[in-house]
Length: 354
Image (tube, rainbow, N blue to C red; front, side, top):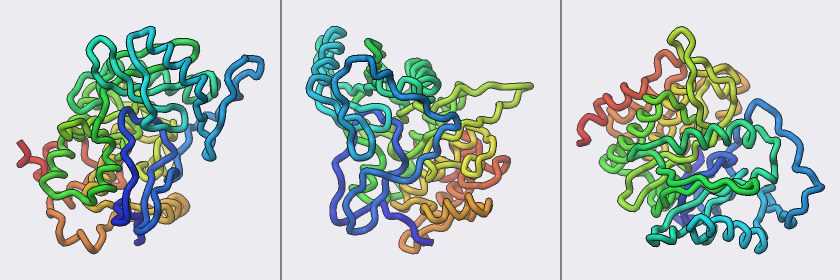
């Protein structure tokens, strides 16, 4: 099976630091090719997008990038800078962007602390499912989180349709950039980092929260390389009926990390979908490739048959048997046979990490 390489000896892109934003999928590299700005297909939310904002409102002209994302004008930047300045922050340069938001550096004036801010302009697309449904959930969930391996939100500022989410600045960027620059990880490094990621997922699941968009781009590395899970744009509070979690029917996230149930447009257990995505993350950490390429994903969607994951020849004999076993048990097509997060953390491959 041909897989898309994430590691390129010819060079790599600069890291996108700070808070993640909802993106259009999982960027990939082929050997010797430049870094693309697009990515794998994104599984759109099940509700259709709404109408564009009213043309009667007088706002600075919005310039669109080639991929349709809004580009801030100087006047818009100055306006945003004034809004956050009133709250005690100095707005800095942009360090990342996504479909609905941009991320910039901010300095907290009272102590000079460098943070990141995710900026969502709800005026641009006020009737989209993201703005009306997912964004309010993201705000209510992210502000309540308190864990070493989940992004720390300091403050949420809302003014004139603009939402500023102030959070810790992940100096080392995201996990995908780290793998692009350094290739697949050693067994020791991967164990320690993956343990932190899994602990973050357990914290969410213990609080009946499903992330639903776990991927390397949404895992950020702090100065000491501690991994933190970010971007809760598609997160969901899980409801229970008769003690059982209600299946999710919102088809969102990145296809490359989507569980078979979500991939085949079936109602799915959101926590178990997170476990599948977590298996994809570990596979990428160890192999520096995606577990399934675009052609394979489309074939599986068309035929309804999920193939067992295969490992690249250049790493298959180097991987620890326990690591391969853990990946197999997370990338298990049948939900009732897939590991819970407690089983992931209790797996022998992670038991030796202190």
